[in-house]
Length: 226
Ligand SMILES: [Zn+2]
Image (tube, rainbow, N blue to C red; front, side, top):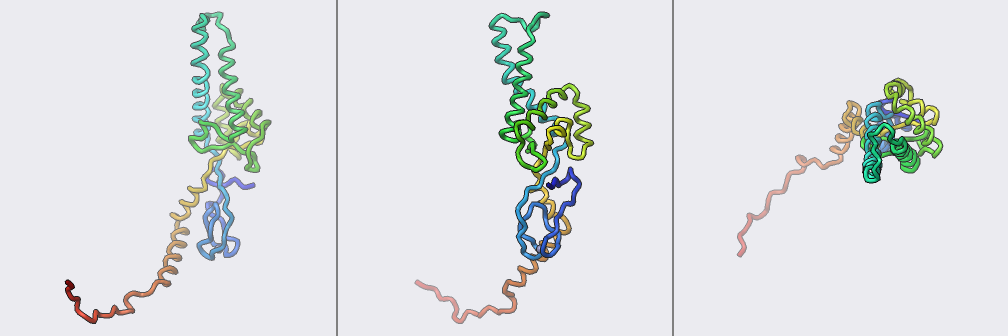
Protein backbone atom coordinates (compact mmCIF):
# COMPACT_ATOMS: atom_id res chain seq x y z
CA UNK A 1 0.00 0.00 0.00
CA UNK A 2 1.56 3.23 -1.14
CA UNK A 3 0.09 6.68 -0.82
CA UNK A 4 2.49 9.03 -2.41
CA UNK A 5 2.67 12.50 -3.79
CA UNK A 6 2.70 15.97 -2.39
CA UNK A 7 0.35 15.47 0.51
CA UNK A 8 2.15 12.37 1.72
CA UNK A 9 5.61 13.98 1.60
CA UNK A 10 7.15 10.93 -0.03
CA UNK A 11 9.91 11.24 -2.61
CA UNK A 12 8.98 12.73 -5.96
CA UNK A 13 10.99 10.06 -7.81
CA UNK A 14 11.37 6.33 -7.73
CA UNK A 15 14.51 4.30 -8.43
CA UNK A 16 14.76 2.05 -11.50
CA UNK A 17 15.03 -1.56 -10.32
CA UNK A 18 17.72 -2.31 -12.90
CA UNK A 19 20.05 0.71 -12.94
CA UNK A 20 18.90 2.62 -9.83
CA UNK A 21 18.53 5.81 -11.87
CA UNK A 22 15.92 8.28 -10.61
CA UNK A 23 12.82 7.91 -12.76
CA UNK A 24 9.35 9.47 -12.62
CA UNK A 25 6.61 8.11 -10.39
CA UNK A 26 3.80 6.42 -12.27
CA UNK A 27 6.02 4.10 -14.29
CA UNK A 28 6.93 3.99 -17.97
CA UNK A 29 10.26 3.30 -19.65
CA UNK A 30 13.46 4.03 -17.73
CA UNK A 31 15.19 6.80 -19.69
CA UNK A 32 18.59 5.54 -18.55
CA UNK A 33 18.52 1.79 -19.31
CA UNK A 34 15.23 1.20 -21.14
CA UNK A 35 13.80 -1.03 -18.40
CA UNK A 36 9.99 -1.03 -18.36
CA UNK A 37 8.55 0.02 -15.03
CA UNK A 38 4.92 -1.08 -14.47
CA UNK A 39 2.37 1.67 -14.88
CA UNK A 40 0.96 2.77 -11.52
CA UNK A 41 -1.33 5.61 -10.50
CA UNK A 42 0.08 8.04 -7.96
CA UNK A 43 -2.35 9.42 -5.41
CA UNK A 44 -2.07 12.36 -3.09
CA UNK A 45 -4.48 12.98 -0.26
CA UNK A 46 -7.10 15.58 -1.14
CA UNK A 47 -6.50 18.81 0.79
CA UNK A 48 -9.07 20.02 3.33
CA UNK A 49 -10.19 23.02 1.28
CA UNK A 50 -11.12 20.87 -1.73
CA UNK A 51 -13.09 18.54 0.51
CA UNK A 52 -14.87 21.44 2.18
CA UNK A 53 -15.84 23.05 -1.14
CA UNK A 54 -17.04 19.78 -2.68
CA UNK A 55 -19.10 18.95 0.41
CA UNK A 56 -20.98 22.24 0.29
CA UNK A 57 -21.38 22.12 -3.49
CA UNK A 58 -22.90 18.64 -3.23
CA UNK A 59 -25.16 19.71 -0.38
CA UNK A 60 -26.44 22.87 -2.09
CA UNK A 61 -26.95 21.05 -5.40
CA UNK A 62 -29.00 18.15 -3.99
CA UNK A 63 -30.89 20.39 -1.57
CA UNK A 64 -31.98 22.60 -4.47
CA UNK A 65 -32.91 19.71 -6.76
CA UNK A 66 -35.06 18.11 -4.05
CA UNK A 67 -36.06 21.16 -2.02
CA UNK A 68 -37.33 23.54 -4.71
CA UNK A 69 -40.02 21.19 -6.12
CA UNK A 70 -40.87 19.95 -2.62
CA UNK A 71 -41.43 23.43 -1.22
CA UNK A 72 -43.34 24.41 -4.34
CA UNK A 73 -45.63 21.41 -3.83
CA UNK A 74 -46.12 22.31 -0.16
CA UNK A 75 -46.98 25.85 -1.20
CA UNK A 76 -49.60 24.54 -3.65
CA UNK A 77 -50.99 22.28 -0.90
CA UNK A 78 -51.41 25.37 1.29
CA UNK A 79 -48.77 24.43 3.90
CA UNK A 80 -46.97 27.54 5.13
CA UNK A 81 -43.37 26.56 5.87
CA UNK A 82 -42.77 29.90 7.62
CA UNK A 83 -45.51 29.33 10.18
CA UNK A 84 -44.45 28.41 13.74
CA UNK A 85 -46.29 25.07 13.48
CA UNK A 86 -44.71 24.18 10.10
CA UNK A 87 -43.92 20.46 9.70
CA UNK A 88 -40.34 19.33 10.20
CA UNK A 89 -40.38 16.44 7.75
CA UNK A 90 -39.65 18.44 4.56
CA UNK A 91 -36.27 19.50 5.94
CA UNK A 92 -35.62 15.90 7.05
CA UNK A 93 -36.43 14.74 3.51
CA UNK A 94 -33.82 17.13 2.07
CA UNK A 95 -31.11 15.99 4.51
CA UNK A 96 -32.07 12.38 3.82
CA UNK A 97 -31.77 12.92 0.06
CA UNK A 98 -28.28 14.41 0.48
CA UNK A 99 -27.28 11.46 2.67
CA UNK A 100 -28.54 8.88 0.18
CA UNK A 101 -26.84 10.76 -2.68
CA UNK A 102 -23.47 10.66 -0.91
CA UNK A 103 -23.77 7.02 0.16
CA UNK A 104 -24.87 5.69 -3.23
CA UNK A 105 -22.52 7.73 -5.42
CA UNK A 106 -19.43 7.03 -3.32
CA UNK A 107 -20.33 3.35 -3.13
CA UNK A 108 -21.16 2.90 -6.84
CA UNK A 109 -18.99 5.58 -8.49
CA UNK A 110 -16.28 6.30 -5.89
CA UNK A 111 -16.94 10.01 -6.26
CA UNK A 112 -19.64 12.71 -6.30
CA UNK A 113 -20.28 15.73 -8.52
CA UNK A 114 -18.60 18.02 -5.99
CA UNK A 115 -15.59 15.71 -5.69
CA UNK A 116 -15.31 15.32 -9.47
CA UNK A 117 -14.50 19.02 -9.81
CA UNK A 118 -11.22 18.35 -8.00
CA UNK A 119 -10.87 14.80 -9.36
CA UNK A 120 -11.15 13.48 -5.82
CA UNK A 121 -12.07 9.86 -5.12
CA UNK A 122 -12.95 7.86 -2.04
CA UNK A 123 -10.91 4.68 -1.68
CA UNK A 124 -10.12 1.95 0.78
CA UNK A 125 -6.62 1.80 2.29
CA UNK A 126 -5.84 -0.80 -0.38
CA UNK A 127 -6.71 1.83 -3.04
CA UNK A 128 -9.72 -0.21 -4.15
CA UNK A 129 -13.34 1.12 -4.32
CA UNK A 130 -15.20 1.42 -1.03
CA UNK A 131 -17.83 -1.05 0.07
CA UNK A 132 -21.38 -0.09 1.03
CA UNK A 133 -20.74 -0.29 4.78
CA UNK A 134 -17.75 2.02 4.41
CA UNK A 135 -19.76 4.56 2.45
CA UNK A 136 -22.54 4.35 5.07
CA UNK A 137 -20.24 4.89 8.06
CA UNK A 138 -18.25 7.74 6.59
CA UNK A 139 -21.43 9.52 5.50
CA UNK A 140 -23.31 9.03 8.77
CA UNK A 141 -20.41 10.84 10.40
CA UNK A 142 -20.39 13.37 7.58
CA UNK A 143 -24.01 14.31 8.34
CA UNK A 144 -23.20 14.59 12.06
CA UNK A 145 -20.10 16.63 11.29
CA UNK A 146 -21.83 19.14 9.00
CA UNK A 147 -22.55 21.30 12.03
CA UNK A 148 -18.99 21.06 13.37
CA UNK A 149 -16.94 21.74 10.29
CA UNK A 150 -13.99 23.31 12.10
CA UNK A 151 -13.23 20.09 13.98
CA UNK A 152 -13.63 18.11 10.75
CA UNK A 153 -11.24 20.40 8.86
CA UNK A 154 -8.68 20.25 11.67
CA UNK A 155 -8.85 16.45 11.61
CA UNK A 156 -8.28 16.37 7.85
CA UNK A 157 -5.46 18.91 8.02
CA UNK A 158 -3.62 17.25 10.90
CA UNK A 159 -4.16 13.50 10.54
CA UNK A 160 -1.60 11.32 8.81
CA UNK A 161 -3.94 10.16 6.04
CA UNK A 162 -5.95 13.42 5.87
CA UNK A 163 -8.96 11.72 7.44
CA UNK A 164 -11.91 12.95 9.40
CA UNK A 165 -13.27 10.72 12.16
CA UNK A 166 -15.78 9.05 9.80
CA UNK A 167 -12.91 8.14 7.46
CA UNK A 168 -10.92 6.60 10.29
CA UNK A 169 -13.85 4.45 11.42
CA UNK A 170 -14.79 3.46 7.85
CA UNK A 171 -11.12 2.94 6.92
CA UNK A 172 -11.39 5.20 3.88
CA UNK A 173 -9.21 7.87 2.30
CA UNK A 174 -10.02 10.70 -0.11
CA UNK A 175 -7.37 11.05 -2.78
CA UNK A 176 -6.65 12.83 -6.02
CA UNK A 177 -4.79 11.37 -8.95
CA UNK A 178 -1.48 13.23 -9.40
CA UNK A 179 0.20 10.80 -11.83
CA UNK A 180 0.29 13.24 -14.75
CA UNK A 181 1.52 16.09 -12.58
CA UNK A 182 4.28 13.98 -11.02
CA UNK A 183 5.48 12.88 -14.46
CA UNK A 184 5.43 16.43 -15.83
CA UNK A 185 7.25 17.79 -12.78
CA UNK A 186 9.88 15.07 -13.15
CA UNK A 187 10.75 16.03 -16.72
CA UNK A 188 11.06 19.66 -15.70
CA UNK A 189 13.32 18.85 -12.74
CA UNK A 190 17.17 18.86 -13.02
CA UNK A 191 17.21 15.04 -13.01
CA UNK A 192 14.64 14.86 -15.80
CA UNK A 193 16.54 17.47 -17.82
CA UNK A 194 19.74 15.40 -17.49
CA UNK A 195 17.89 12.33 -18.77
CA UNK A 196 16.53 14.37 -21.64
CA UNK A 197 19.93 15.77 -22.65
CA UNK A 198 21.56 12.33 -22.49
CA UNK A 199 18.83 10.91 -24.69
CA UNK A 200 19.19 13.80 -27.13
CA UNK A 201 22.96 13.34 -27.40
CA UNK A 202 22.54 9.61 -27.96
CA UNK A 203 20.04 10.35 -30.71
CA UNK A 204 22.36 12.97 -32.24
CA UNK A 205 25.16 10.38 -32.60
CA UNK A 206 22.94 8.10 -34.62
CA UNK A 207 22.35 10.85 -37.17
CA UNK A 208 24.59 10.98 -40.29
CA UNK A 209 26.91 13.97 -40.18
CA UNK A 210 25.91 16.19 -43.05
CA UNK A 211 29.15 18.21 -43.20
CA UNK A 212 31.40 15.15 -43.63
CA UNK A 213 29.73 14.10 -46.86
CA UNK A 214 30.23 16.83 -49.48
CA UNK A 215 27.32 17.16 -51.79
CA UNK A 216 28.19 16.16 -55.36
CA UNK A 217 28.19 19.13 -57.66
CA UNK A 218 25.59 19.00 -60.40
CA UNK A 219 27.30 17.46 -63.42
CA UNK A 220 25.21 19.30 -65.93
CA UNK A 221 23.85 22.77 -65.77
CA UNK A 222 20.08 22.77 -65.62
CA UNK A 223 18.55 23.03 -69.02
CA UNK A 224 15.35 24.63 -69.92
CA UNK A 225 12.85 22.21 -71.34
CA UNK A 226 10.27 23.03 -73.60
ZN1 LIG B 1 16.99 1.96 -15.52
